[in-house]
Image (cartoon, rainbow, N blue to C red; front, side, top):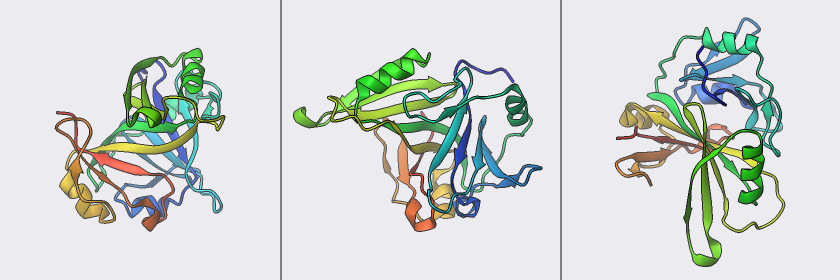
Length: 217
């Protein structure tokens, strides 16, 4: 595999794979019996937890430990080869790649510094909202995936950064909505020329917030 700097290769999910299957993702099993699916170059590995639903550990090239409280783990050469050997998958819901992985923080400056000190460089920022309640988005790249950090423009406390949600890209958004069913009506996205729908994840037992978008124009 020709990996890019800090390329994201695996996301662990403390989730029920059947819930994700109901959303139109093609679920497979490793020889060990562990369920997974793949979007683009990223493998989603299930580690079901009855008490906590949501993200587990994430693995990216050249990042070997947690950054602040973001649960990065160490990526072995064996795991890289294992993920690379999995062929590209076609999902019934039309999802073809990850657009961005969202992290929330109470202190954008602190979390940005932690990421940059670990070698993950900010590529851009955007602020929006009312003067006394402005929100900052800071964008980093993990290979082909955008890491989007969202938090108040001025720190509001010491709460740790948290993996929050996913934005995915569909090659056929109408098919996506037809297959998933439990999602919001299609609307214009923030990015010009794109449309977006949000999965009603709690209705299907999924702990990760998911938005699905049309491709970039």
